[in-house]
Amino acid sequence: MTASLLRRVLLIVASTVFLAACTTTSVVSEWRDPGYRGAALKKIMIFIAAGDDATRRMVEDRLVSSFPKGTLAVPSYTLFPDGKEINPQNEQKIAARLKQEGFDGALTARLSSVDKDKVYVPPQSYLAPAMVGPYGSFYRYGGYAYSAVYTMPAYTYQQTRYLIETIVYEIPGGKMLWTMTTQSVDPDSRQQLIDEVTRIIDDELKKQGLIAG
Image 1 (cartoon, rainbow, N blue to C red):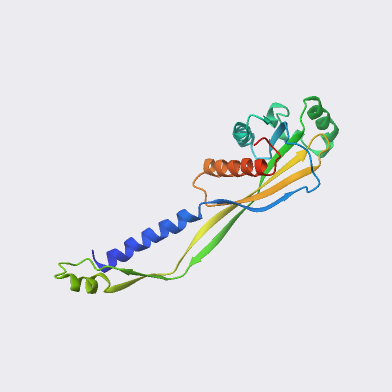
Image 2: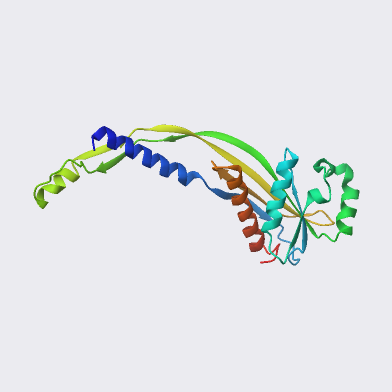
């Protein structure tokens, strides 16, 4: 393997590993009402404030399917087909409907921002074997194996960060019980983004005792 070819291989491998490591979803902020002493919520309406109806329905269904058996989750589109119905002008109407249906909680989520950043990766040096053989005796091998230091040049790449805000409210009063913001960096697909955020929402709600464990 020539030195130039080895450099290219190292660059590809290092870049792939680095970028793969960045494909993650994490919690960047979280708050829970310290005064709430209620039990786990029993029936929660799931409302996704999405730009299009197909996305709203798909994500609501995905969240509903992830909830444990001890907590009944219901997609909001089955109650309010037009998401724009859920607004301050209809507060009394919405509250009456939710109370009538026996809801004690509502979960809302929205994509709060999409940010594109340029990331700078500084030069990195690697000690790599020069595979030229034959090596002769054992005592000469080290001279061949560690005869060259290869430096991967600095480079930049663009990453996309998705911030998603999730809030749980007590129903019918409408008081905020819990909120969380997650950050997803360069997900491979929309489905991966939804799956990772859904998993974190479930985990955190169980940890906070807001849904059945």
